[in-house]
Amino acid sequence: MALAKLGVVVLDCPDPRALAGFYAEVLGGTVEGEGDWVDVRVPNGPALAFQAAPGFVPPKWPSADASQQFHLDLVVEDLDAAEKGVLALGAKPLAERGGSSFRVYADPAGHPFCLCRC
Image (cartoon, rainbow, N blue to C red; front, side, top):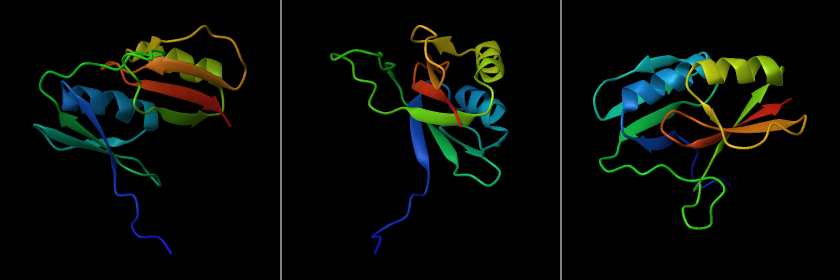
């Protein structure tokens, strides 16, 4: 028996509206809210929230000194097309392209995420 259910994943960042806009484009969601807390509602999926964090320092990947803390795995059908899209939206590659099942990037605020072929 579960003690709780997941409500929302919240990412700290310097500009909640801007980062919410990035993920809304990537996931096909809609941005809701203003100010220090902004949500992205994803059709048939969990919401993501973005919270203003004064003095935010992005994680470094890979680094033992500044751990990534967490990352998102985003499932895609076409890695090449998804990569082109996230790069156009401001993502930065974090690893060599290698491999046919996943690729690692940082969002515009520096959080690591992977595109994973389904």
